[in-house]
Image (cartoon, rainbow, N blue to C red; front, side, top):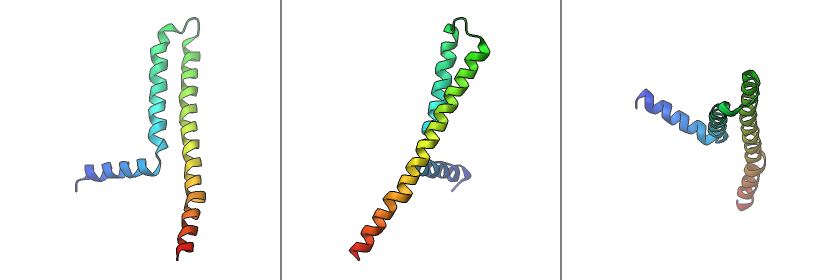
Length: 92
């Protein structure tokens, strides 16, 4: 196995563990791309204000995706797993 294959499998393992990370990255780039295209029609808004709004929107999306990911992980670890363990104990 080459180093490339190891890195690829490591990336896929991380994506499976935290599915909201790629969603956050994709959302970040989508917002930045949209805002850069919209920059032509910003009207009287200063460039710095437009860039600040773009940054805040992109960071907000990433933080939101991270928050949802943490809540999903907590749900999976503290609600789903105990139920499965309790069912397995009852079946024994």
